[in-house]
Image 1 (cartoon, rainbow, N blue to C red):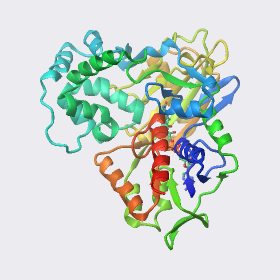
Image 2 (image 1 turned 180 degrees about the vertical axis):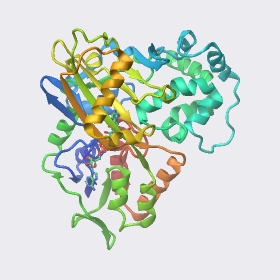
Image 3 (image 1 turned 90 degrees about the horizontal axis):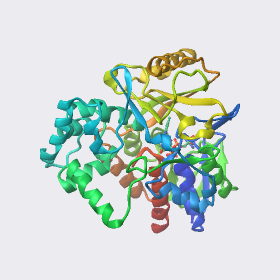
Length: 448
Ligand SMILES: Cc1cc2nc3c(=O)[nH]c(=O)nc-3n(C[C@H](O)[C@H](O)[C@H](O)COP(=O)(O)OP(=O)(O)OC[C@H]3O[C@@H](n4cnc5c(N)ncnc54)[C@H](O)[C@@H]3O)c2cc1C
């Protein structure tokens, strides 16, 4: 069997790797001159700066398993204990986010009224029908408006750069959706889970139930490099291929294949498949994206005006600021900055303020810096600056997302041996991509 994989981000690379490991002949086509897609590490002047993701959570096995299969466990780099301390910007100051759901009750983040409402979740009846519900509607219904503004909104900005009013709960947070369905509520569900985990003798990592943030000593590009080595001889760079179906066979860049895995973002998949199936192309074009800019600053630590003791902070929309948040990278992974220096990355834009990403670079950097100065009390000018703009950064799982995705997958099956694997569909994080890659490779093999 011969399989074409189009798109060389982590989703496409991992799919190709899993296929090759099973003896399948694979050829990968990547539009750019380098592999990795959103995953790229820049190493400059002793700094290790990520243009996008800075790691994955080890609470799920998918990326870790891939790392093990590639034999690069020795390169893993666990986040420092400081990353337990996460902050929310609230009423002009940074307030520590409590580590577990129950300590929210003691936190100054919510008002007494907000806390009572949070506890009232125990008495909220579960939603009866299975219709899609927005994240905002779900949180308002179960936990109250304050929890939405102070907790969910910044979290959604941090993970999805998304708008909770438009995002689908089922698609973005399937486990939370399931908690209500299975246990009747979130607090009930969390108690039940703690009990179940105790029975199994397991506990969550120090950074919470998701696990520890984990990366690689030299940055996330190390994972891409390892995959690239494994796929040597099977990769075409700088090729945006034509995908056609002729007489029951797939033609990619003029060559015949038995199956095609489209691992590009949805908007690129829509273009690729325009001539193959109009409905499929239309559905793919309906998957929206939020733009995001990452502004990196290198500072001298001395006299900085902040101890950077933590992971970083997120900003709720209601605070009316111009950034989504900032990551204190060199506190999380100390080797990200040279001795005596600090690396901070600021996130700008998202579905909240997409227009900011289009500002001229100088203005964008100025805006990010002035927000840092104001929010953190930074007292030094940065010695290094990096700007990475992702015009279509993170897929926005809006209402109806899962139905769209199901139809996309179904049409792929109807056309025969056309598969989709990318963070556009069933999860936006690295673990979601590596899980989808393994499952896609298994599906390809099973159906051939
Ligand atoms: C700023 C930012 C921060 C993030 N932080 C985290 C984080 O800390 N942790 C986490 O888990 N996730 C994070 N993510 C999400 C994570 O980066 C993505 O889930 C993941 O990198 C997506 O990989 P992918 O392969 O699905 O897509 P992509 O990385 O987008 O890869 C798609 C590939 O397809 C190629 N392509 C496009 N069109 C064509 C074509 N016509 N022909 C051939 N090739 C084509 C592209 O060039 C690209 O290489 C972050 C994302 C962003 C933007």
